[in-house]
Image (cartoon, helix red, strand yellow):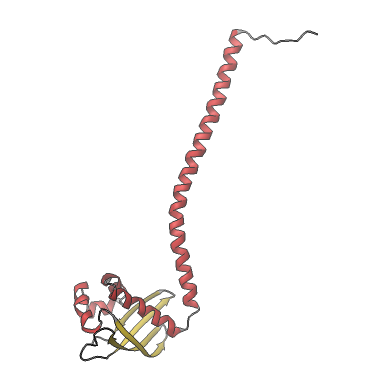
Amino acid sequence: MQKNRIQFTKKEKIWYAIVALLIFAIILATILNVRKNSSEKVENREDLTIEEAEENENQKLIAALQNMEERERMEYYFGIFLEEIETGKYEKAYSLLYEDFKKTYFPTLDDFKKYLPTVFSEMSNITHDNIERNGDVYVLWITITDAINGKPGQPKEMNIVIQENDYNDFALSFSVI
């Protein structure tokens, strides 16, 4: 039995070689393009992951705030303000103040910083005495004492006014004493 062999001319061999190289080049270009796109997606995914993590934390906080009673929520908001002061993050604490209140009593951050030691100590002890609500505005009556030194003239009574626009969206002011 004799095998039938196909004989290609030199011209046909060159032609098939060129077609094979073109197919190989197309496959190689496709693989490189897929790798490039997937690495870009991974980089974007990392950015999204950070944003998603922040959004996830914010959603958890909002869910926790929704489950709190009004008084607990207002005490939490004031606690955020007080913590910023105690940790020296005065700019963050200042940003939580109601705009008209800032303009009237503390037009600059330096004015705010100068006032703080007159009322708040490095570690203040806060007693929440009462709370009243009028629409989206809450008034907390608090008593402040210096938890470490007990300054003369202590305790000090103060009203904290908190306007809650939405969960975790608030501004506050207080009686300037």
